[in-house]
Structures are given as structure tokens and as C-alpha cells.
Image (cartoon, rainbow, N blue to C red; front, side, top):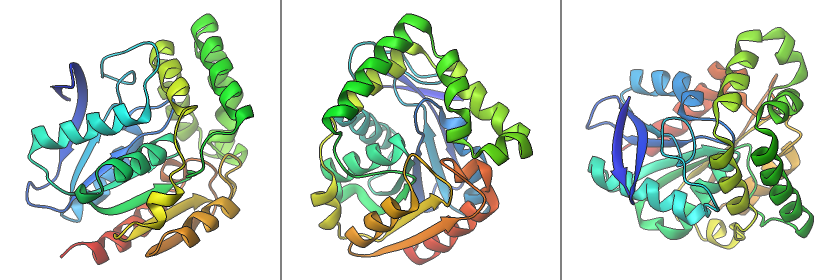
Length: 268
């Protein structure tokens, strides 16, 4: 594990694959860490790509910053990390909240984006009810810790049939959630409640995009993925069978195949 000081905090990250490979940045979701991308990092580096994964501030091995962390801060951290690693432009991708941070990166730094990978995510701003829910959940995590929440949502993060059928995957997802700092997770939830509408900047995107979704995702259903796909000017849609909100872990071979096929069309 490597770490760098960016924007006044320490970020834990991995930079794998050949230095001259196509740079691919993968942003983890909430409340996880960069280990959720290990299978993809291995597959992509075998194909000759350079894969950069980092723990967002407040998560994993990165520094915990309480309060409110806006998505613009996460995007600026990612840009600063790329600066430190000497990467000017990259494929930027993420899942769920990580997908929304990817959209924020594209909104702020479109000139640095070679392509987009958006998995199980939504571009719409938070609703009034959603804002109340995010802030109430942040209060709950600070008061109770994250264990109870993790137990409640495991069969939404991972399809119920995979909780029993893929116990190693379920254990990994639970372990990531339980290891997350309540302060870091709460700060991200408060920032997520304030996210802007990403639809205008995505509709204006001048780069290819891959939209991926698990067929049984209840957080961001297939219908939302189809709408996101239709919004983007140059997009490919991949629906992963046998998966819910985390197809990269539930069906990694299918997820990786979709990403590698897409990158094959992005790489020079």
C-alpha cells in the first residue's frame, strides 16, 4: 500500500500495471474501500492497462476528515493524486457513490477524462426526501456505529441469492463496511446529499462511456441505467446477469469482460 499527501490529507492508494499503459482510475462506493476493485485491477493490468485505485478521504487507509465532504472535494483529491502520479488524462470510473464522484470529476475536469465507466449509479440530484434520509443516516452512524447498518443492507448491496451462494463475496462486502469509519462515512453522506445534477454535463460529454448495472440492482435499477445510457452521447450499456448493486464482485468475470471490451475501443 502506498500513501501520498494531497490537499492536506493522507490518501492510501495502489498504482498497478505498466507505467505506459492506458491509465484507468476506479473510484470505490460507500461505505467501502479500494479493495472492492482488486479483481478488476488484476484483470486490467494483465491486459496491459495501468490501474489506479485510492481510498477516498474518510475511508480505508486514507485520513478521516469529519464534518461534511462534498463530492467536489473527492474529485479534487483524485485530480491531485493524478498530478502527483504524473497522469494528465485517464479513464475515470466508479460504482454507486464512486460513479457519482466520477461524474463530479467529469464536471470539474472534463479535459482530464479519456472515457467514463459508470456502474450502478445515478446522475440525478438528491431529492428533498433523500437529503433528509442521508443526513439522518449520518447521525445514526455517528451515534450507533456502522455495524447495524451493514447488516441491514448486505442483501441490497449483494443480491440475496449471492449472500448465500457467494459467501466469500458477502464476507468481503461486510468486512469493508464494518471497517469504515463512521465519521468518514457520515461526512460523505452529508456531502452526497448536496450533490448537483450531473445530467447536463454528461449530456455534453465528448468522450465514450460505459454504463454497467446488475440486473437485480434495487438501488439503481436497470431502468435508471438505460436512462443514463440514453443521456450520454457515446455510450455502451452492459447489464450483468446474476448480480445486484455490486456486479464487479458478484460476477467479476462478466464485469471485467465488459470493461476490457470497452477499454479496447478507448486505447489508441
